[in-house]
Length: 186
Image (cartoon, rainbow, N blue to C red; front, side, top):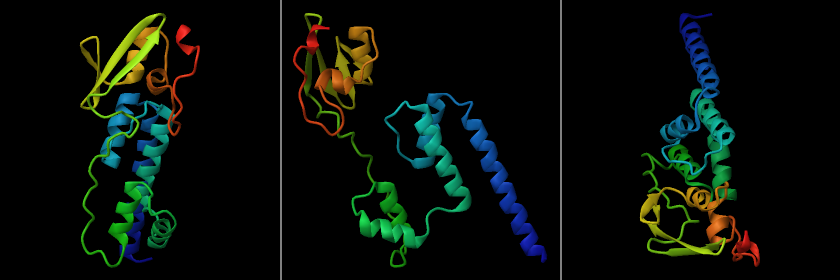
């Protein structure tokens, strides 16, 4: 075995050991720490507080960075089969394609499509009281105070955990149905 191959093998083992330690450290992280790690690794925030989801995606990214990502052939196939794939896949395809000599420009931060446009007033009658929330530049105004999520406001109103989109808009992702009859009597 040559000296160069021994050194590269040691470097590879060291990188894998580092990844292994980082994966173990994920178990002890809080959701806020995981969200910050996700932002650092992916360059974009995740709108989830699901700890298992964040750990899984962070672990995948750490391993991808240490061992290499998808092959150029796989990325080309993604481009062919799913031209509307998430932005991170399109950037990866652009970075590895032979005709691209420079890195692709980072995508602008996408606005969460579930949130109505700024200035929209959401109204919900709950327990006989009308509650209004105004969408303001990525936040929500309720009773003169800014809140970062509709779910937090729904919890304030009801005292129970609610999906804010379901509570105020009467729908979950991908559905356009309005609030169901009789639900406001809770």
